[in-house]
Image 1 (cartoon, rainbow, N blue to C red):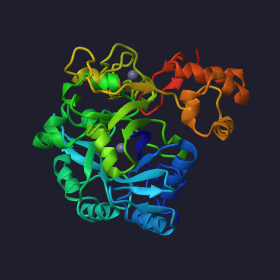
Image 2: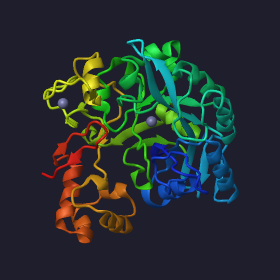
Image 3: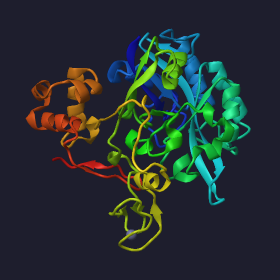
Length: 397
Ligand SMILES: [Zn+2]
Ligand SMILES: [Zn+2]
């Protein structure tokens, strides 16, 4: 067995011939470029591409397989250059009735072993989605119904960014996943934590003790791939091995989660839409202290304070550690060119963030930046929390 890195939530901006898939994502973010970025720069071994149910993307995948550098394997997934395994996925927004009887919406990550499976899934989802060619579209069914369709085509469903305010189960629909999935709850092997939460926060909810936690980038551009990722122990890179690791079977496992300090996420604290800023104060904050408005965007940190059922964090025994990482783009003084230079010298961002000594880094970018990178690694930089859709900020020391 050996260690691999997996990032299971990467979007597609456009197809190779420029058809829009996720309009807010970068144009260069297409199937082939993602595969190359994982191999050449990020050192990611398993990547989940989450817009593969779009018929336009399916055309790209078929073309990609014809080029000869990539092939499908029996255990599921597409191997490219013998270095990365691409997992075909689809992010679907389901329609839920929340606990106040209003409509809520939640994002679901659906993964499939083979191209033929996701093709069949796509075909069936046409009946539930208006525009199947676009990313993360809303379906007219609930997750309770969706999970049956996913399983019919050999897939697995995982709740996406489970706590974010607008499009997630805990953020928008429920305080307990079990109320949504009922007797099917046991079919869900994991949840995705999302950028604004971490293991420490999520383990305040007891129904999550039996679920694995995933840390994925939700990348909308190539550089953002692997800003969060999972380190896993597997026998090989494939769909089958990936899910064995997620389910902790036969010695496969998630070794640790690498993720942003949740304060850096876009929805960490509650934000007043009237004042246009985060609301200070002890969580849970549910109205503005300055203007008294309840026109707020709930923070993930505040939301978890409201719905938690444990007094303090108590993780189950097999819970892997969560390691904070501050991506290079967040580090003060680091622009695009300098990042380029670092990656030219040290191959991957992971090397720079976790492995190299200050001396090594200093040789390339000077003392001040090297010091900031090492202090970020050690959690010694101050962070101003994000909220209302605005990322948190590293403010130096
Ligand atoms: Zn989403
Ligand atoms: Zn206010």
